[in-house]
Length: 247
Ligand code: NAP
Image 1 (spheres, protein in one colour):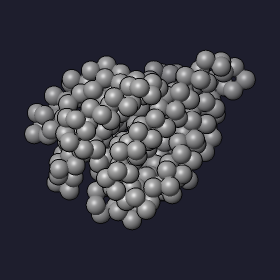
Image 2 (image 1 turned 180 degrees about the horizontal axis):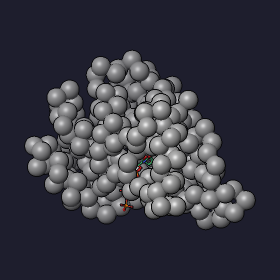
Image 3 (image 1 turned 60 degrees about the horizontal axis):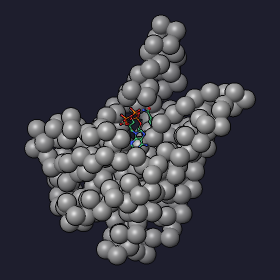
């Protein structure tokens, strides 16, 4: 229970990686705001059934006023905000020469600008407390990936944002780190099983030295550690959770 009495927000936590992160934080004793586009009642029920404390909040992270309301809600509901996990993200893949401006803007607005709003709003409050943990979910794709110009640009932006936030706020007791998941089993990736009768999924497994996809809990474990007091001296880092896939 290393996060007992801590209050956390996880965005995009209704399903997938975000849900796995929210569950791990709650398992470790944190009170969790499960934030998503639609009410995340199922995720909240799962956490409560396991003995954890959680409630849902509806937010579109691409809208600044909604993210401001989310942080306010955490403070009003549980009295403070200790941990902000900016996880909400989408992809709209396509080769650069065919990519529409709409798909560029959409991915940037959620994956990068949404992370900016969440980071900024949390930091404003955490500076007044002289403590806090920001954990931003980037991706191994930040290094560049065929068909993902918009996503790679957004996820690389998340790393620049994270490192800057870390340096600006280190003396205020706030750490800010990025996690790059490799290939984790969620709706975002399971779509590959439908491509070429599963051949696309199999070929992805061959790119992972451990030869299998990660689980949301694998990323959740790293988030729980970075959120804990034991990680107080770790900031401005980019940490891969990818079974050896990201080099
Ligand atoms: P996912 O299964 O597609 O889930 C994404 C979640 O984010 C959904 O609950 C979705 O809500 C929510 N969301 C989407 N747009 C939002 C918005 N504007 N405001 C608030 N919530 C929003 O994806 P995932 O695989 O869990 O990915 C989570 C994060 O990990 C993303 O940032 C992704 O880029 C990153 N990541 C994933 C992998 C992987 O292998 N899965 C690898 C690297 C990085 P709805 O249900 O309403 O759509």
